Image (cartoon, rainbow, N blue to C red; front, side):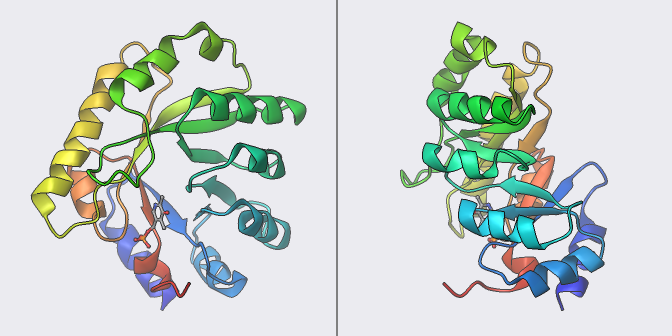
Length: 217
Ligand SMILES: *Cc1c(COP(=O)(O)O)cnc(C)c1O
C-alpha cells in the first residue's frame, strides 16, 4: 500500500518538486516500506521521535523537522537534521546556529511565513521576514543557511482561499529572492492541497496521510 501510494504520487510530481514523506506517528516498518521504494527524505514534527528513528533507520535518510520547534529541543537533532522547515524567529535561528556550530556543521533552514487565516498557525509576516534577513545579527550567523520559505494554508474546503494563500507566499518568495540568492526552496503543500501548491510554484511538498494513511493519535 505505502509503496503504491508513494510511487503514484511521485509519478505525478514535476521533476523539480521535492517530496518529503511525512512519517510522524508512523512505525519504523512503514518508513522502511517507503525507503525500500526509493524514498530518502522523511519529515517528522517531534524531535524525540525523529531522533529515535534516526538512530534505528538507515543512515542515508535525510531528516526534515517540519513541526513547530522549541529552542530547548534543537540540541538533540543538531548532529543530523538535514532541513528545518518551521523557523519563525531570530532567537530560534540563533539557537540552531549555536548547536550547528558545536557539531561543526551548517544547518539549512526555511523561515515559516504565516499565510493562513487561522491564528493557530505559526509564522512570520513579510515585514518580520525582511527585518530578519536585513539584520546584522542574522548576517553574523555562519552555521545556518536560510535556503527558503515554508507555509501552511488554511485547512478548508475552499480551494480559492487555499490558492490565494499559496499565491501570497509565492509572491513574498519572489520578492525576496533577488537580494537573497541562497533562497531557493518554497515548501508548501500537504496531502489535501499539494496539487494547488504545485500549480502556484511550490518546489517542495510535505505529504503524510496520502502516503502512509491516516494517523491515529
Ligand atoms: C503533518 C504535516 C504535514 C503532512 O500532512 P498530511 O495532511 O498528512 O499530508 C505537512 N506539513 C506539516 C507541517 C505537518 O505537520
